[in-house]
Length: 339
Ligand SMILES: Cc1cc2nc3c(=O)[nH]c(=O)nc-3n(C[C@H](O)[C@H](O)[C@H](O)COP(=O)(O)OP(=O)(O)OC[C@H]3O[C@@H](n4cnc5c(N)ncnc54)[C@H](O)[C@@H]3O)c2cc1C
Ligand code: SF4
Image (cartoon, rainbow, N blue to C red; front, side):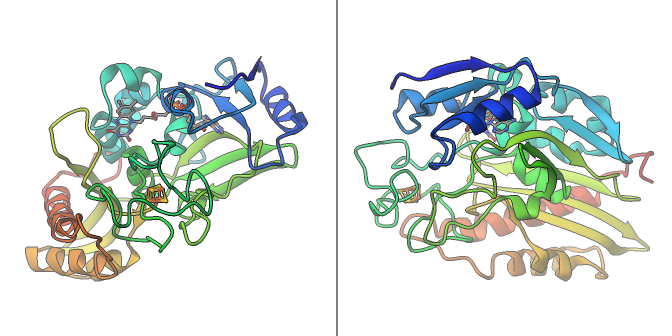
């Protein structure tokens, strides 16, 4: 681990000013905020992250989970465990609770935060091993995974330079819920729909989001729940706990008279970013609620898949995962507050 300067911020302004004042702030972010530390500290121990300045944001007033703008605002420092057990999340956004509880372990969820989870790094083994070529960690060095161990990696949104999957469960649920990320910087505040927050790897896999150096995430806004909607998260993995998704699906569904009135679909474990599928949504809306509709939607969602040497099985697995999640959502009762 490299030496670094440590600052504890007590206000949002102090945090963003400290980040902006750093001489390295403009040079591809050597400044890092630390929240739960469950990802950043791991990355530093591996020498994958080598920040010169760390700003501890745990004293900021960003832990609240509260109704806002008709929806629910999750402070950036709200802990994954608190969000998962919050009564409004359980009632109106069960997909998010299920996604969070499927991730990591109880101890990690007690530390991990909403903001930190948004920015957790890929589990690609070559990214985590500094002796290996990896364009995401070291731009221009090559991608060891394309002809290497890629069983866990992405089949959607990949490029010739990177096929790493986004590992988060939370972010798949937030994508199906159409959440908005709230950001503050010395230039002011802005809100970005999660759909536009992550960027595809293309030729610059080291750039993962639209964040600029020194941007502080202050919260995540969940919109008001859709009338009559039910939501489900399903995660398929090699073992039942403490394991990342091979494939997952987050769905929001509202039905009327045996037809699908509204659908939102996001996939995890298979995309280079949390993967929203407008193709699947289009194939669902207005169609009868039955297995054939679900199978067609799943086929649409995976139409653009580009598997590599070890992960072709994910094409079928992801379709089965989505069909099962849709079947579960269709047979779930809508919350009284959204009915
Ligand atoms: C063994 C293990 C198993 C795991 N299993 C799963 C799993 O199954 N599913 C899953 O989804 N996740 C899993 N995780 C990942 C875990 O969810 C993340 O480590 C956690 O969510 C990160 O949150 P944090 O608050 O600890 O982030 P930190 O480690 O504090 O920060 C992560 C990154 O976010 C940045 N950051 C943090 N807060 C802000 C902010 N407010 N504004 C701007 N930047 C910010 C930091 O600078 C850093 O770059 C696992 C982790 C471990 C160690
Ligand atoms: S898939 Fe991406 S993260 Fe993994 S080795 Fe290739 S460039 Fe690096």
